Amino acid sequence: MTSGEGGDPATGLTLTDLVTVTDRLRATTSRRDKVADLAELLRRTSPAEAAAVVGLLLGRIRQGRIGLGWRTLESALTVAPPATDAILTVGDVDEALETIADVTGPGSSTARQAAVAELLGRATPAERDFLGQALLGDVRTGALDGVLTDALAKAIGRPLAVVRRAVMLIGDLGMTATLALADPDSIEGVALRVGVPVQPMLASTAPDVTAALAITGPASVEHKLDGARIQVHRRGEKVSVHTRSLADITDRVPEIADFARGLDADQFILDGETLMLDEAGTPRPFQETMSRFGSGEEASTTRVLAPRFFDLLALGHEDITGLRLIERRARLADLVGPDHLIPGELTDDPDVAQRVLEEALALGHEGVLVKGADTAYTAGRRGKQWVKVKPVHTYDLVVLAAEWGYGRRTGWLSNLHLGARDPDGRFGPAGGFVMVGKTFKGLTDALLRWQTETFPSYAVRESPGVVWLRPELVVEIAIDGVQRSTRYPGGLALRFARVKAYRPDKAAGEADTIDALRERLI
Image 1 (cartoon, one colour):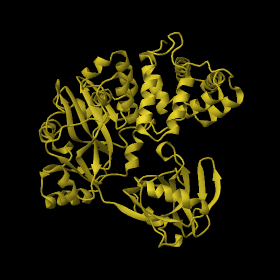
Image 2 (cartoon, rainbow, N blue to C red):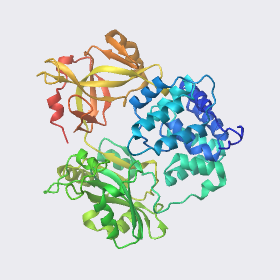
Image 3 (cartoon, helix red, strand yellow):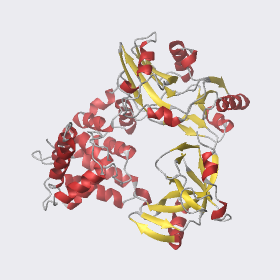
Image 4 (tube, helix red, strand yellow):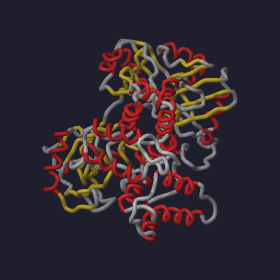
């Protein structure tokens, strides 16, 4: 691999270059400093290295999932002593990961472990630590996609808006960096292409429809389904279906692909959701929908998905993202028909919007999306003119532990382990607590400071990165719902949990029970 400006063309960037930068990123809370450090690194990165560099920095290697977990890494670390000299390049690492990704068939586990051991045996202790974090998706620097995008714009000297748009339309930051570093001018020519998934437009939130309409003005008030976001592309007979994260799931959802092929247009991009319905047309639990997105071979005839759409990004050879929402929605209705169009009503009347909300809830949906009637589709952005309104439920739970933060929250006790009361002792001693989720959402700087000052006096033990507390502190948590989960011992997990306030007026014995949460299962 050749390096970019400022590097040694014979070797390219070294792995130690990335280690050094990530150490600096962890040491600062300044977004500006993080952007500057990353921009300098990207200026020294060749186009051939770009995707690998971005993947390693984000903990999302470009090879995707290659079958590596803690056990494989721990075993490899035991077998292979660390190197004394920093000789590994990014190209070396990328080549090794490509080899590991290609390992399949009988004996693949042993071969994969041997390849990992060989790679780690060429790495210094600091490089081994970084590789472990990158391979397990745990590179905690506070520099995620947005910071790297800013850095890329700075590195190539192009407007941030132009680079952001390219990332949205290409759908992959590593690929965008490759293109931008090879030819900065080409970044301005990136266009929407049928068959290439784009990052979806997102919505902000409001407490009620009146507040939402105050933001949007006249709006399309649409049912917010409790389904999985999908993006459907068709060019001729070729159809692809993608998730919110742009993963290709076409082979797992043949009924959606068949639906797209049956529409009266041979080229389009649809944005919508899919869900499972029972015989009465009521949504099935969200987890049942998501089970179809896994890697299993579940037959589509046993659990059929019902696709529903709310936007149209392209039709024929025309990119229509710049049209007004009401124009796109009219074309969408003509294309998919009323049965596959997510219901909505155009209004600026809060009473009408409230009625639509109540209708959506009565049908078992999450709430409504209030979308400005004249808004364009801004891929990958949380549009101010798209506002979701969902009922919020609150519960009093107990703090069982807290994790030390990273990035901007370095030095503060942050992520909370939350427990519900278990009066009958089904998950431990009667009257104890069972863990039901984690959250750091809703924590202000003042609360972070208070937690860090207060929690040590409640500490009973520490494990790496975690302080375990006496179960005495009650916190009010807002959630959107509760779902079944095997992740936590109570068999359920909180959806979109965020801190509202601590409740010093309540004792732990007054916290909500696991049964109260179970009643909210969706």
